[in-house]
Image: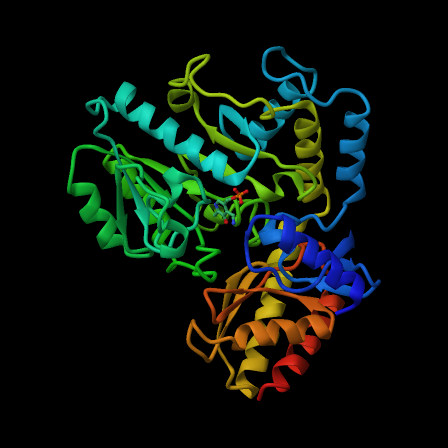
Length: 409
Ligand code: PMP
């Protein structure tokens, strides 16, 4: 590491509260699939800020929309109407096929909002007795880091000494339709089922074909809301606009974040139809920044880029190519035991246990060869480039990955 990088890393470590365990690289510039560090070294970004930068770094149309709006009006709060929000709300609801949207800022905040919405619907529409609503969630979920959300996390390091927690969650095995059926039948107080269509943070677990469609049908049968957290899987990442579209499912509540802004600005959203969304009355939920004019302008531009550049189709096609290349590497290198994913949300599993440093060492080697990726749960490495990547670039990245892995053979 250069002395410049080291000095900047030390500043973050000395003055910033601990957050993740960052890979030692200090970035200062991004364009499309590439990022550059402070010494001018260029890398392929294979994390895309956990699938936020689907449209590529600093997409000129999205940045342009942000700058243009920022020079005119940035924030009024929701105390007044603004000229961008309604336009965005009409656009985003039509885009995803819902009556209404509730604008928020971050993914976790949108998940919290969806849980509140689901509970209120349960009391006011379904008729569950006050404070009795239960929401079904999945083992190994990741929905963010607020106190309510970590109440039902499996991650003990993220939970320890942060209690007391929020009640009212039933945890079942992911990708187990019988477990869902049993949970739905276990009580009259079930209000919702919160699910990631693919579990991203857990290590890119793709559920069995038909799971989401069956889960939706069961929820309908029991008058329970199917809540899809597409913060990571949505906005073309898996080869469709939403990952639930692979099974023709329309959720009752849809949660979006990350790539809703192309990573340019924090924008998240909860979408639902009137019969659900209208249970929230004025003054019952809100946010100073949610729905601000810059966020609205940025989100419209970000969604237009997805359609205009056919990024879902690109993710679908190049995902197949990437997994084929990774499988070929795995066939020659026993270090890679599993290749999995959908579209451009993929992971390889390294032949070591979760406590091993091997996947971390491999990611450091990727970095040395010009590709940035990060291990998740020790032995899994997520491979999720911006969706603007080309076939030629995928081939180049496969060579880098193969070369780096061969150093550990
Ligand atoms: N839900 C899912 C499925 C996520 O992957 C994430 C972030 N990794 C979140 C929610 C939380 O989003 P944020 O970090 O913006 O709060």
